[in-house]
Amino acid sequence: MIHINESVMQFLLAFLVVGPLLGAAAALLPAPPGLKGKSPEQAVLRHGVTVTGVILAAAIVLALGFDHHHPSRMQATTDISWIPALDVRIHLGTDGISLPLLVLTALLTFLSALYSYFKPPAGPSPKAFVALLLVLESGTLATFAVLDLILFFLAFETVLIPMYFLIARWGGEGRAEAAWKFILYTLLGSVVMLLGLLLTGIKAGTFDMVALATDNGRSLSVSVQVIAVLVIGIGLAVKTPMWPLHSWLPDAHTAAPTVGSVLLAGVLLKMGTYGFVRILLPAAPDGFRTFAPYLAAFAVVGIVYGSLACLALARKGAKGDLKRLIAYSSVGHMGFVLLGISTMTPTGVNGALFANVAHGLITGLLFFLVGGLKERTGSTDLDALAQETGAALYGRAPRLGGLLAFAAVASLGLPGLAGFWGEMLALFGAFDPADGLSRPAFLTFMSIGAFGTLLTAAYLLIVVRRVCMGAAPKDTTAYADVRSYEFAAWTPLVVLTVVAGLWPKALLGLTDPAVQQLLAGGTR
Image (cartoon, rainbow, N blue to C red):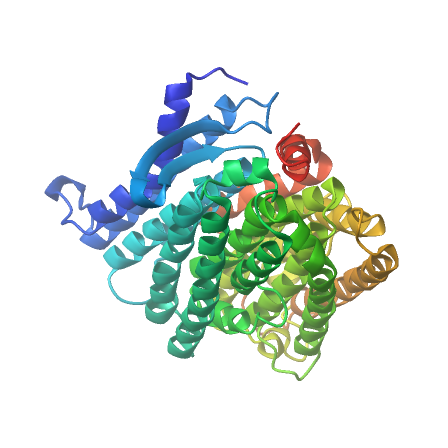
């Protein structure tokens, strides 16, 4: 990897957080006459592509300059006092746990902006759309970069407002209700979480995540840890989304515009699971151990529930919506992430972090593909797509059909693709959980989770059979196959899904040393 000066690395990380905000402010200004092109709308959409492209380039340079020999060490750190009275600091940094999520966020936002440039979402002014997209990116990147509990909460909240407006203004049918449900659920969860973060920081005498991880819960009594894990965990679980706090998700996904769904599934859901790993596991290990079996139980119920809901939507005559089906599949996939975290073992937590990134790539691709399908057919209703003879995508748009089949088999965890490793490692972690956790209980959870993988394969293969296969009616015209801009937006996700599947060390080599140190209480 290339050697980059530490002060340049600090600037890059700070730029990742602040850059999109500056871009959002610029998007709302009138475009200079020379940049307007055919229309001001095109100019502002082009601005969105440029800003997200620059942020992606900065994230890639940050990843290249990262010291891969010491991924457990916080790098590119900035630590400035912000509110001295509360000892709140502007503390930024990245390690092997957060770096993949920073790059994933920058990539998915850039691909969403690129897709929107050629296929602007139907709705009001593109200016507001681009500005909201950039504020959303800034909040998400900040969540993964900050190392102070209060800043983490602020970044966590920043994301809610732009996503609310993206659903409410540019969404489809039922968007107002879905947007309200999204904001109410997540705000209520966040209020509870804030109380837990304040309790932890005040009792420990610091809001600094690195100090809390190093302390490893020694300055917090067990009862404080239990309360902290319960209240912070509820806030994080809503965002994850953990069964039974998931009911906002299917509505939000079904109503959201294509890029809204891509970013919601690909990035926003990761903020909850990241909080579990970054804050609760190291700062309150005794409290976490108390709740770990319950977290695992909710996780495996979510795996089976999500899969059964998808099977119900996929069956003939159910009038199942394909976007809704993929949303329910996310409940199942995030169940594996939570199961991995609940084992409190390096194997399980590494599996959870791997599954996080894999889910972002694969589900992001699935939502892009369903958006393309809706644009061509005017519907995401499975019965309408399948009709009597099947939509027969293989015959009408072979590349689109092939990509949909690829994303489906990647999502069901086919070995050799990214979806496989995270789920397998999470199940391995449950096979031999951390000391103090009931092994028989976790073996039961592992068995239920493994059964969930069979159900996942069943519903995804049903979807592929109904949408892609069958004889195309002779009197219908072929759909437009994958267009060049779609090819540009989707190819990186396909390539990374294959690379992560064939070479998991690329990701696990980053996360494993950082996870080992986190679980050892920062003492290694």
